Length: 89
Image 1: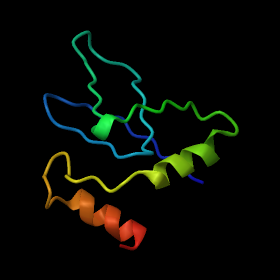
Image 2: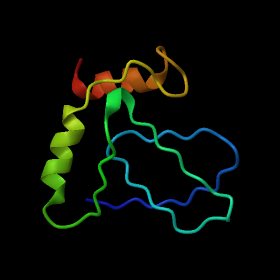
Image 3: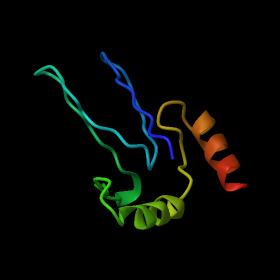
């Protein structure tokens, strides 16, 4: 498995990460803030890449329902089509 790393420099904008996308703050200015949104009363699931975490994580990600809306583009946005294609629906 390859590990992909990237550094994002963001200004005031929208950024959405789907389930299973690892992310980490390496550094930030004092006014940097992160806001998480978890639909339908779900709670965040913090994993740290420790041995043995992966099977449960894979199961939890696969069990998530396809969202009703793309968080940026709405009901007709690409997220829903990509998610459905990945699940073969």
